Length: 451
Image 1 (spheres, rainbow, N blue to C red):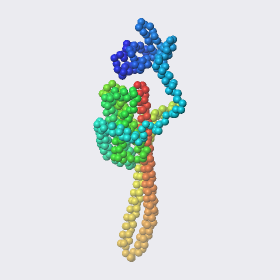
Image 2 (cartoon, rainbow, N blue to C red):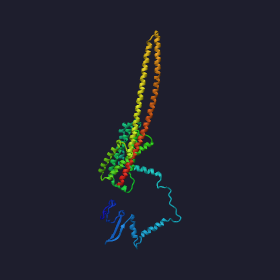
Image 3 (spheres, rainbow, N blue to C red):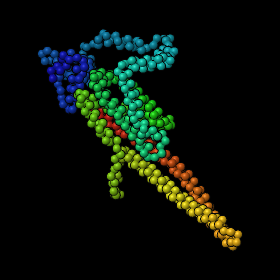
Image 4 (cartoon, rainbow, N blue to C red):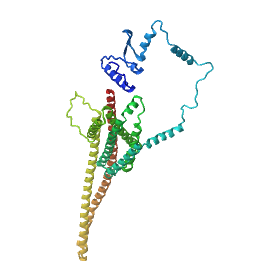
């Protein structure tokens, strides 16, 4: 290659040399002639062939790191003295590295140049600068309106989720949370492609200079709207650790949605292709995460084979097991409740029949006159007999009432167990989300490594 960097600016020359370096890393040999190279371009080569006019070779060999082999070669040439500037610098370094007699170490009254009380002011100033931008205000207002509208739409379906009594309440809450994260995350992933595509040069410059990613501030601010409206309208206010878990997962979800949009722009030449790629991945994520897909029954496994399960399968098994236990407990409680109700109704029916029989006997007694004392005595005996029969029925009824109360208490205990199972299920779902995020992070790291 004959002077591939001539006529190019520093950035374009760096791109060309990076391409040449990647070609060499594949095992090929590239020979280039360079005219007045910069230090970065010069040290990008592995070997140097230095010739003067007429074909005389001055140096031919490796450069090594910081070209120290080239420097050692020229320093070893007989009759070559070091430059006056180098000797002066070495003497100055030697002189300054030795402290004079009676000198003391440097001392500063504070560890940092600014006091701690100035830090909040700088932070508020940064926040005001961000809020002064018209685009930031517009985006924040639209995000607030969309979050409020979404919560109001879901309010009628999940307004009782703060008091979960059955499985459908839990499913409503999960569906509302999933839908909000998917729609808002998809909006972030789509809208960030336009910004990154416009500011592609700035993004590459910040990446090359190792600057802090400014988008982290926006990623942290956006989940605040969802957290506020969800906790207030949908009744998702519980323990502090659960609220922090919820905030953490929302923040991470918005972050990886936005980061994926940025990655799509970085890996594609134009924004339109990035939007197509993002639409494909969003549909794939919705299909993979929006439905509970049961695994087929593996059948009998041989004792010589060990089934290998990944984290996703274990999460599915744990979630399926928890839901199965929850449904079995709920069905058992409903069945016992119906059995006890049937028994109580049967006992009440027997008591009503005995009461009617006693009323008929009393009517017969009232119809009898004094000459019929013998019959009256016989009737009284019958009444006593009926009373004796009713007494065990009353005791049985009281016993059934006590059994009913015990059944109600058992039902309440089952409700408590159900609430514990629901909380355990939510923790399992959170753990599953954390593992899924971990897998996505590993995937993104692998992609960065291959890139």
